[in-house]
Amino acid sequence: MRASMLSGLALATLLLLLGCSTMEIQSDYDTGTDFSTLSSYAWLDDRSAVEGGEKETSSLLDQRIRRAVEQTLLEKGHPKVPQDQASFLVSYHVGIDRKLDIHTIHHGYGYGYGGRGYHHYGPYWGPRWGGYSDTRIREYDEGTLLIDFIDPEQRELLWRGSAQARVEGYSKPAEREERVRKAVAKILEQFPPET
Image (tube, rainbow, N blue to C red):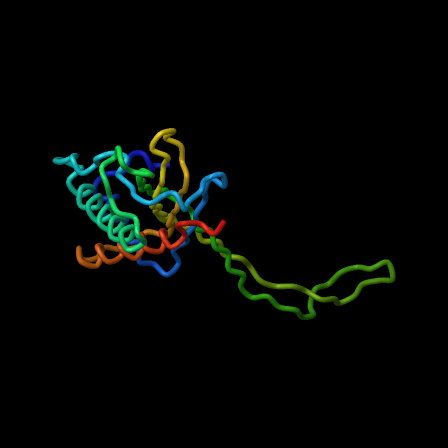
């Protein structure tokens, strides 16, 4: 698993999964939480302070994710406030895992006569089966974007939403921005949960 050791290039590539129609969205939450009390939020940490070197590309990703989260939460009626005034904290994580796609194709199934055998009554011509199988194995990257909402006092997880999909090819920065926005919006459609 390479989720904890992403390079700037891998982070940029992760963006490309976010517009896929095959994106899987999931959410989970603490059933003991009264989500109607969660009104305003603050970011748990300040990743945007990281600059330079390999982190430059991830800094662009950080900006895009934060913009998308802030815009979506504001549209849902949750303004960003200073951390000491927030009723919940927000954090996110990205990761890429190497996966295997194993696909077996069966060729040439058939049924006919021509197989010779022996039965206790004597020799006979019986059915024969034909065909062969071809198995292909391909490696691919699967990207995940997690968005977490955290209790500001206990620092315990209240809600988590995720998007997961196969990482695709490169695209333009404007397309990446739009794909991040759509992915974040899809994740946050699950919040607040229907309890």
